[in-house]
Length: 379
Ligand SMILES: [Fe+2]
Image (cartoon, rainbow, N blue to C red):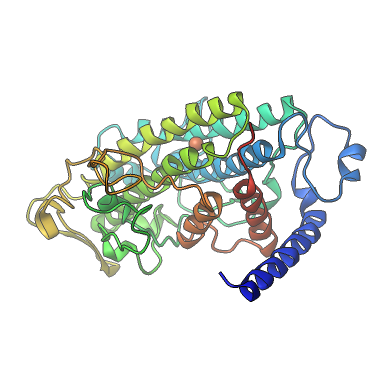
């Protein structure tokens, strides 16, 4: 890098910091202050309060709390319509046609959706409680619960953080975990093929928007199949995010939190990876959404077929790791550390989850992600 590039980079950096300080004074109200008097907390006009945690550790935990709140919001919407509504995960009364379509992927889909939802709620609740116990600011996104959710019978009529009705689902996670030759950390420009190309473009509902979406049968099945691949997309994101951020944690107990929550995301991912392969059981006839002929779910064992698509290859194939001088290794990927939080935020944004959200919402999330990515491991 030459000097002039260096110079402009540090100028950019200064303006980034200045802009962020401005944003912070604006977004402060979006964060719930815990463990400190509000007067003391607001006296610090720039940084969130880290309490007794190192700034980097608090920033990582706050970004994860935000991510878990977002996950909880979307999983709650799935549970209201397609899960099990009970005292553990209250809300909604189910949509029989949607629940039945999901059960074509696995007879226990409703229970798995319920359990994934409960897990995410427990994650953000725990992380916020831990932050508060250390006198650090916690995360509260309630004022962004403004999006219209499903109007189908069975859904609650409440504002949402996330939009599950206009998704563009990146299904390349499916082939990324089957590839024996490429690893996104070593091959950042390699385009892993999409399992369902029709989901990777356009905008697709993963829940019925109204009762009009409950028929014809192939249409509600296409919506359930979209959900099936979206479940895998969401949980593989968490599967990479925790080990990536863990590498920048300083405190051993905070590291323990990341190392203990992260693998439950992987347990979710492994389950959804298995179920996505059941999106079409018919060996001969692909499922096409009658309302959107570009959305086709083929039997992946036949079309395209081969090891990159074989549906029962649900365990991570060995791939190059760290360097190609080492033997291939079965691993979570990616786990590179640079920009991991911002990468996760961008993936969720491209997914369409935040369609309709406010500028303030994106600014707050970017701010939390930037802080998390700036965390440095300290001895
Ligand atoms: Fe989670």
